[in-house]
Image (cartoon, rainbow over all chains, first blue to last red; front, side, top):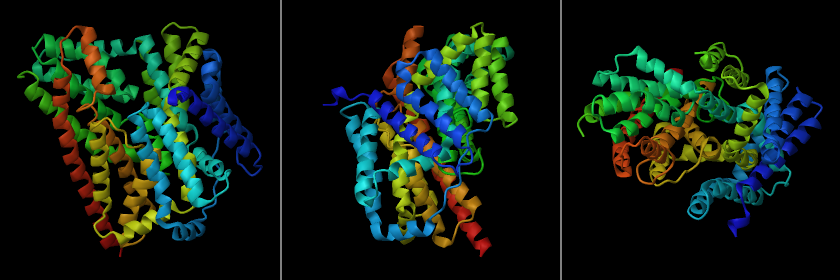
Length: 305
Length: 223
């Protein structure tokens, strides 16, 4: 049954939803940046919904056009009325029934991921959750577009930042930026000393992850440039222990970098925080404590086991 | 060295608080050009990578209509009421439990949710509701509780996914060493992931207890 359903269908659906939001926006004369915002969301709708069928260069220019709209401040979020009292009254009427749809989504996603792909299962879970939410609230079918559109506009350009960063990582990889950095680290430090080698490797994982926003991108470069030659070959360290704790050190970098936008910046918008660095500030003590632990365990164990 | 121009641009851009999207697109263009690709090649590369990574927006955007609709009908208010009635619930305990649950499921290779699916609709309102039992939260306090909610999701998500089921990170480490001709077993990678996962739980306990203490102290001073 699921054979006919692919992620591509969900990309179409997302494209349709974003396009519907763009049209609603264009029809709203009270919007602060009506045409620029509508154009931004329409471009995104096409790039996500139909991106696979368009020439890559064409999509590239569309992405740059979105960037230009953002740079010239043509994309804005209107002020949405609060409606707090109406919500309080509805909460009283509906009670715990409001919770079921939101719990249905992960339930379906988890159960489904045992059968089909996890992203596909999550997509089905979201549709099931939406149906349940409409049933519970008895609201009009247009309401999810209006309310989802409100959250979409609140996210704004932050939504496509993770994708753009993944693209930047890809370009860095193609251009050979990583090898260059690993060479500089190895040349600048006395990495033949066992402790210095561990510090340089784990520290390099953090710095590199902070710059690229992704520990997976940092791992092969640092391991090839510093880990294997200086911890394993020069000092006889264990590759499995080194690699495992090295990757976990990289995650500490992910916790503190704005380049990991989907983890650290998207939630700032989703949770309507004022300070762009609020999530990073909450995570910094975690990152420091976990990194020090990783370095200690690696230094104490990598040369022994 | 010229290839590093992109990193320099990103550092300067974030330092001077230029719009992050603009910085990232500019750095991509500059790096591609500096590495000797033509403008059209770089733009095509950006387009291809944008389409390849569309999966990143899927879990967020698909969740928005569900969350938006339920919030219009009072989801956050309902959760706040529930939390006010639960005496044992504190913001810190809720966040620690969520981090542990998120990590525990991720040991089994199950992804419970993300910022759009769990934190915004459920975890953040729960933590806020529990914290508000002692009186209304100021905007600054609310911001701090919510940021810790996002942190619980990230920390729970990151540090326990290579223990039992072979997923992304574990396969990447194994695949890398295989390609480099170094013998490494999956079992050993899994085993050496355990200490950090336990340590992260302990650090979470310490962080969220500190949050609870801060919240308690603040209230006393405010009244």
